[in-house]
Amino acid sequence: MRTYDDPCGIARALDHVGERWALLIVRELLLGPKRFTDLRAGLPSASPNVLSQRLRELEESGVLRRHRLPPPYASQVYELTERGLELEPAVLALARWGSRMPMPSTGSLSVDALVVALRTTFDAEAARGFEARVELRVGLDRFLAEVAAGGLTLVRGVAGRVDAVLEADADRLRGLAFMGAALDGEGVRVEGDREAVRRFLTLFPRPAMSS
Image (cartoon, rainbow, N blue to C red; front, side, top):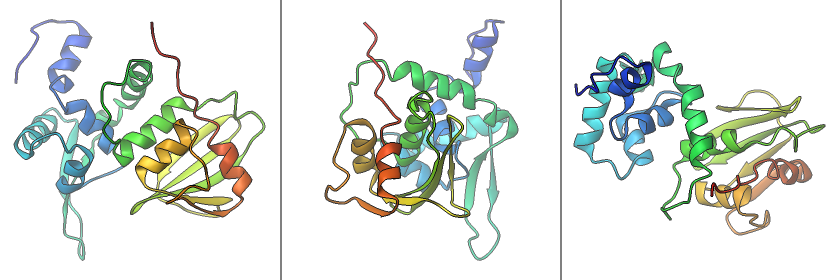
């Protein structure tokens, strides 16, 4: 493992998660375990060899672990350890900081990157007095977005009653939340309380760019 050979805590952290793709792997695992193929789909610009190497390094550092799901799945998945989950506040803070920078890429966001973006741009003041449970269906992924008491909880999977369902692919959901795309546009489907969905989509203003 390469090292900065610096006793500072920042340098010691970067010794473990400072290599290219490392923190993006953490981002992809914040919402739960994934197979290697799922990680490849979320990080398409990372070559399989580089991705495998980063996964080994993060496992050796205790940031993630591998385990095999029980039958009938029997797939090997990667998941964050408790130590890895401790990186979440830092990753979200970094996402907020980076969202104010110019956007050099015109590429698509992965589904999990989009969910992280929703969490980091949520405007608590705009949500004042609004409560709703919205199921987000993004391809095969399902998420529960719950707005209550000026806060947002956004987790993978859905349990219990919801006020509305919003179904769209990642690019369309990104357009709805961040670019003012029309809710009645092609490839978008809403069930339940349509007005709650409209209000929900106003809670993610794009941050002002840093000068």
